[in-house]
Length: 479
Ligand SMILES: Cc1cc2nc3c(=O)[nH]c(=O)nc-3n(C[C@H](O)[C@H](O)[C@H](O)COP(=O)(O)OP(=O)(O)OC[C@H]3O[C@@H](n4cnc5c(N)ncnc54)[C@H](O)[C@@H]3O)c2cc1C
Image (cartoon, rainbow, N blue to C red):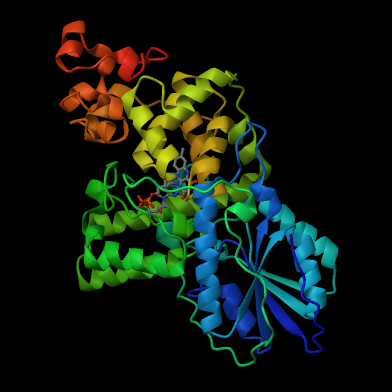
């Protein structure tokens, strides 16, 4: 619970409210606050609404992501201190916490990065209502690579197909320069007794990321910048990104920037300008372009979330679909726990359970399997991802889920992934499924992809029993 410091500050001070922009570099809200030349105070709130159980009985924010947020806030606190800004950290109701800080510290302006998804926007609206005109709320747009005012459409006219969005943006818009870091003149001196909570204090169980994980994610701006340096300049993995990005095993097949991007530990504009630097100093090719292309997908889902508001979180999706969904809890449970009997699906679901991460290839396959093969309520899948993913981002998660489920902005709404073909295309030797499913470890090569096709003799030869070591398929595949 929030404990408030009772100080009376006669001067007018400004507050930076950090949410999903946990960095110093290229941070417009922080930049604007410092440039008021007034004393600057900062706050991060672990909003109690984010740490509750969902109606499906699991946590909205699970321990993997909560731990990453804790690390990111801790890093932000240290980095802000180094420039003379104190970060207050509370757990509670955002509106109440901020209202109290405004009173205690004589705050006249609040600078913050605007959100685009329903729950988060609602917090801003409630804050505005509560503070009324006593404090000026100065929100900026900072979530995307392209600024909202620089794309060639109003949000209401945003194309429903990505390609139409991409072509026009590429032809007509430019990425802005970075905001520079400013220097604080007036330090607000007081004893900051607030501390970053532990998982336990957030009411969450402790957790460790499996040592088998592709990457041991650690939160914070400093780690984000290290990762970019590693991926771009130390290993030059960016130069092969387009070729490797659909793989599922290893640290460098893709950038792994997503978790830091979701919390704003790294700015998409900063990544873009580093791509340009890489292109000028090392190499410009299809791969360097493709990372930019993926950042455009990210932008697209952020703007789509703004356009469609709360519909993004509704069963009928963005196209008011009339699909009838299966609400079978037992089917959902098998999918969640990686017990479907299809190794590609189960290995990916195990990776998610044990690490809080899954590749893009994996996400597309498991989402297609849940929604197209099992016909299970797509919102359940999206909520399970929300609970477990370290890189959860409301717009990207629900946007991609809606797209895969056929209730979003895909022109081909009935398309689905052929699990067997995908297994052969992306894990031809079975290395990925054996990595996550120990029951399959005795099966050589591609035999591990299709254990349900093994004859009795083969099972004996490989010392494998489908009932004891794995599962029978829970459903026939669609071909
Ligand atoms: C069902 C489903 C749910 C998803 N949920 C999320 C989510 O909650 N948070 C999230 O950040 N991404 C989500 N994605 C998108 C994508 O899978 C991840 O961004 C990507 O796998 C993260 O790994 P990376 O950073 O190594 O990606 P890279 O391949 O290195 O891509 C670079 C960056 O581009 C962006 N990006 C790439 N693909 C997409 C995409 N399809 N949609 C939006 N942005 C993209 C991400 O910010 C990513 O970090 C989801 C995809 C699917 C199919």
